[in-house]
Image: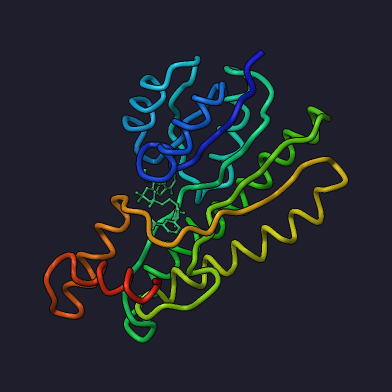
Length: 214
Ligand SMILES: NC(=O)c1ccc[n+]([C@@H]2O[C@H](COP(=O)([O-])OP(=O)(O)OC[C@H]3O[C@@H](n4cnc5c(N)ncnc54)[C@H](O)[C@@H]3O)[C@@H](O)[C@H]2O)c1
């Protein structure tokens, strides 16, 4: 029987890329996203019995329900990719309480709840599993205008290390990927907002950041 994976934020960008690779590797994928239409389109296009689902990862019950629905539809959960995330651009002194709360809810609580829901299911199944979280280069170094985002990614790195230590006895591995720049809709948004703040043309902030990273 095909192995089963869930990818949150699988409707576009890096998550969609992960779904496509997992499907090529023979997985049946539960593609989950706030944008259910995108999730369904991606799932249909990769085949393998993959299905699209709505999820808001900032809500714990949504993740519990997602894992329960996917395992009922597709079978035991082997891999959980907590990929969904958002960016907020702006100086720390200019960041609103609402923006800070939203990014903490999606990026930190989303990964935390995803680990909890997947680990509960994998422990019940009794044959281990793999949990993978989206961190970032911003989880290793702070970059100007990415204060809130960077805080969330440092947090994801920390909770990934703790979860890996706590879940090893259940044969559940927990890891994270830390990309630099990946040209997804998230980077279009980052570049457009930096263009406004720095009063530079669209594309200039991306070039500047690429040069900084080289
Ligand atoms: N693009 C990059 O350069 C880059 C670099 C490092 C890390 N990352 C991380 O990789 C992950 C994916 O980034 P991306 O560039 O593909 O972003 P993206 O904005 O292109 O796609 C993110 C997806 O997550 C979904 N999403 C947003 N909030 C959600 C929520 N509350 N519940 C469920 N789904 C939600 C969106 O609908 C979207 O489909 C993020 O965690 C991001 O922080 C991206």
